[in-house]
Structures are given as C-alpha cells and as structure tokens.
Image (tube, rainbow, N blue to C red):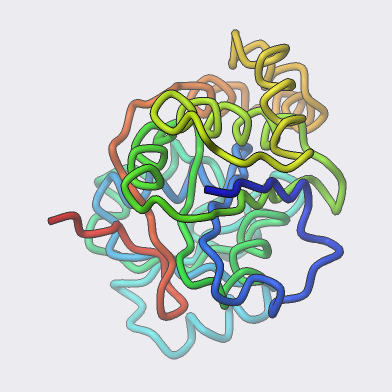
Length: 242
C-alpha cells in the first residue's frame, strides 16, 4: 500500500483525484462537525464550495427537512440555521435532516476531491474507524489535509500522521511518501496531548478568541465515534457496513 499526504489542496485540480481513494481531514472544524452530525442521525451532508451555492441549493429543497450550516471567519453565516461548531449539531436538531454545509476550508476540499473513487471523512473523533476501514480495503490511498487558507495546518497534518501510525500497527509494509513520513514525525512531536496541541495552533487560538473553546475540547477527543462518512453522489452519508 502506498500512502501520500497532501498538505493543502490549493495547487491541485479536481481531476488529479480521479480514481483515487482519499481521506479528507479538517479537524477544526468541518470534518469533526460532519462526523458528529451523521453520528447524531443526520440523513446526509451536502458540502458546497460557496455560500451562494449553498443558498441556491437550499431553495430547491424541502425547508423543514433541510438545514443550512456554515461559517465565515469562524462565525455562523447570517441567515443560516447552524454554524460550524460540532456542538450545534445535536441529535435533537439534525436527526433525519439533510444539511447543506459551507466552511472556509473543509467543504471546499471535499468538493475539490469529488471525482475520487472513494472519499472518506476523518477527524480525531473517528480516526480508528477510518483506519480499520482502510486496512480492510488494502489499497493505495492519499490523505487530503484541508489546511488553512491554502497553507499547512498543524492539526490536520498531526491527524494524518496519527491515522497512518494507526494503520502501521497492522500494515507494516506501507510505502510512505515524504509528506506521510513528515506527518508521522509531527504526530510524534505534537500528538501526545491533542487538546493542548489544538489550543496552540493558529486556528485553535482564533477559535478560542471567538468563544469556541468548547469546540477545541470536543474536537480533541480521540476515537469516540465509530462513524465512517463516505462521499458519493455529491452527498456525505454514513457508510453502511455489512
């Protein structure tokens, strides 16, 4: 199995993902939010790359069964029902609902990778579940870190390193790219205390400044959910496992 880590999607076009198995990571906060929403019973997540498209798509759907979620500069977008805090996506609010989601980095990365053969959503919350599924698939894969405004994101890269390290426990013969090796090294250095690490990242500090310290605590939890979100047909749903 060959493993590569893409530190940011900024220099890649959509067709570069064609036919590949991709794992998307945006720890703070899109993939954590998607995992939690689906784990709490949301029917599906519809990721979009622009606010305008989110509003356009929502206009053609049943209002009572559809929620608009998203953020700009960490804050909920005016007129949207939900922001991008995973804590907002409670079972009471999202169960059975379709959620159209726009975020600054994460949903854009998912949309960019839409031509992947297989596309999964990973966070610290469901890391072991994703690792087990990749091990079972036994195929080459790439991890796409959403990054932060077209730059490397420490938290996403550490999560990528932790995911690869988990897979290495069962697959000793992985063929690692340079970025995969770098991700493992960053996880060894910064991945021991996830809460501290997230709190000290650039984006983590911004979230704390804007009152989202509880999101940091939530997103730093490791392996609390067994969810495997899978993108297919322009929506993200939980993978149905036999």
